[in-house]
Length: 201
Ligand SMILES: *[C@@H]1O[C@H](CO)[C@@H](O)[C@H](O)[C@H]1NC(C)=O
Ligand SMILES: *[C@@H]1O[C@H](CO)[C@@H](O)[C@H](O)[C@H]1NC(C)=O
Ligand SMILES: *[C@@H]1O[C@H](CO)[C@@H](O)[C@H](O)[C@H]1NC(C)=O
Image (tube, rainbow, N blue to C red):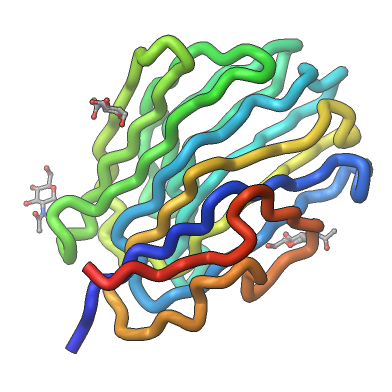
């Protein structure tokens, strides 16, 4: 028997000053079955100086065979916010919206209908322009993560901040809804919301 819980994580920052190296940094929440993941991503205060940078919230299946993600792409001296499912099954790129430093962007991933394996992902710009795309993921997704992915560059663009983060899950467990993710190799500062809160719907 499942219950549907919404976990309000509030606002969290991944501070660049703590780990300014060129590695792949992630913070992950594991929950049996995620059906929605949404919130705001604040574009960092600077554009990466070079290399390849991807900053994203994403959802992964238990076998890590792919990731559904709203990707803030920092290549080529500008930011761009796109929709993708990277991995297996192979899916086309789902379009995106323009992004500039310090702007607030909306991200949203929703399984519709629940249990279908079909996901609608939506990236929204600061001006309210949005692009959505449907991906036939065909898997249950159980890991909600925040990532800073760097190749051939360092974390030189400032803090990464997520706001108003919500994770909706089909589960009767609430212990995962906490300010301490189950796995992380990056420092997280919760701002404003000190404690995650589960809402039984
Ligand atoms: C952090 O974790 C991710 C997996 O989530 C891994 O790919 C990456 O190599 C790790 N980075 C470091 C610096 O350990
Ligand atoms: C998932 O989407 C595909 C393509 O639109 C559709 O054919 C299929 O019926 C959907 N599956 C479910 C369970 O709704
Ligand atoms: C995308 O999300 C925004 C903000 O939640 C919403 O206003 C918009 O209707 C969505 N767009 C699509 C195409 O789903």
